[in-house]
Image (cartoon, rainbow, N blue to C red):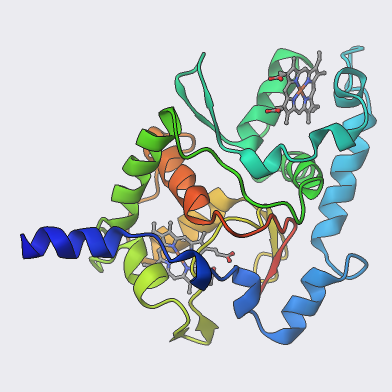
Length: 248
Ligand code: HEC
Ligand code: HEC
């Protein structure tokens, strides 16, 4: 019984009042970079996305804009992703949804997650939701998927026998080799990491953390990875979309 109670307590999400975006734990200078659109290097990718939005792809396929119209129509979309796709019977990230339009409607090959075009388009669409509250669903099919993600978040794994929760719930705010351990929220992705010298996806950051744990990465778009992303996003409800964020 005591064990059960403890497990329940540990798995509780961070209380809403204590929610801190990764931005809040950054050194001042990095915060300033994120806050100034003229200095934020992530905007370079978003501007590539802007160009791709209206440029027709080869072979007379329709551009994003020719179907969707002005990009302002995408306001609020990134804030509610991942969504549940009935046809695929799975959660779908914004990045995967964009790739779906590229392959189905533009007859292009799918792009890899870390390619400039994917990151740029995703950042440009997410930029339309900047400042809006994260509003991913917590009911319907995403309730169960979020539960699966929460279990993964609390699972001790890898050679160090650590869970995500060990660092991002219990040690958040503490110093870790020069970094402040953030709460681990996904509300700024894709984001510019100075260490990468480029924009990167949430999936890339998760590979980073898993290697920190000496644990194996989840395959791209696997149910486990999607469940973890759904849970992370649900756990960040109360924060605003900050794409493109900047990190050291
Ligand atoms: C040993 C501690 C540790 C563990 C365990 C860990 N992380 Fe992290 N995580 C960090 C640190 C430190 C950072 C910030 C520095 C960095 O990103 O390199 C971070 C960053 C993140 C971020 C980016 C947050 C932001 O504001 O940009 C996310 C998301 C994240 N972690 C999720 C996870 C998930 C999911 C797991 C489990 C699979 C996990 N982490 C396991 C230490 C950890
Ligand atoms: C031939 C028309 C067509 C083209 C070209 C197209 N899309 Fe779509 N897109 C659609 C349709 C249809 C939907 C589904 C509408 C819905 O679900 O409400 C959709 C859905 C989306 C969504 C999800 C919207 C939501 O509310 O969940 C995003 C994001 C998106 N498209 C982005 C893009 C981007 C970026 C491009 C260019 C790379 C693009 N689309 C090209 C027709 C198109």
